[in-house]
Structure formats: C-alpha cells, structure tokens
Image (cartoon, rainbow, N blue to C red; front, side, top):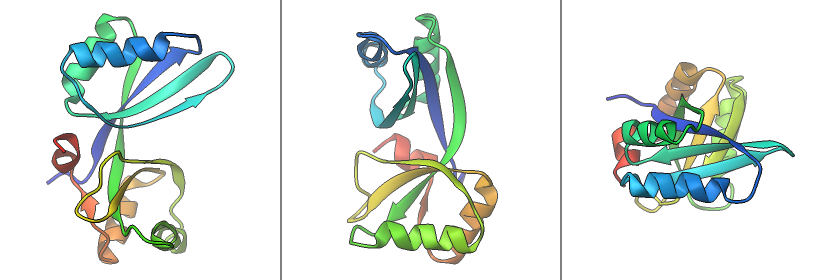
Length: 145
C-alpha cells in the first residue's frame, strides 16, 4: 500500500475573505479538511491541506481559479507524550534526513498524535522510520478518518 499522502497546496492572496472562499469552495464540493497549515508573507500565502478527496478538491478549487498543486508528504504516528516528537526527529537527524516542513493532523490515530512531514528524500525517510518501528500511515488511512 502507498506510504505517502497527497497534500494539496493553494496559493492565495493575503487579503480578507480568500481563506473563507477556499474553505467554502471545498465544503460546497463535499470535501472534508483533515489537516492544514498556512504560511504567509505580506502579499500571498501557501495553504497546505490534507483532504478527504484530493481529486474533488483540486477540481473545485481550479474551477474558482485558485492555483493548486499536489505534493507527496508522509503521515507519521507519534507517541503522544513528552519527547515523542523529539524521538522521531532524532531518528531522522541520525539518518541525515532533512525535514522541509511539518504540521499536526487534526485527529489522533489510536492513542497517538499524527504529524504530517515533508522530507527532502521521502523514500529514505519512510525506510528509516519503518526500520525503527515507527508507524507510517497510508493515504487511505489519513483521507477517510
């Protein structure tokens, strides 16, 4: 089963109402937001989303002329206790894997937190994490939560 998750990125102008328009567009298309992060500058922002249906989301947003891209990311189950995230980051550091960005998933998996990661080398990251017994979630597990 595929060990990566498709993330959509929407480039938006940094002005009132644009974020509301995106979320309304997704809601009207029947797409549920599972995780998100927003990075902004003075003029524009990049909204990164994990959604219940990537195809529907991309189609709906393009219909409204939002520039949309897709990126592969990794969803990792992290033990929800002090130091849990640090232990994952230590494993990645020891393998010389760079974390480009990360953000939290809205729901837990069993009793653990879920963090979305973008790595410079996704395949190596997945391999190293699985070798260390870290649970890497599939796209299917993430989209339909």
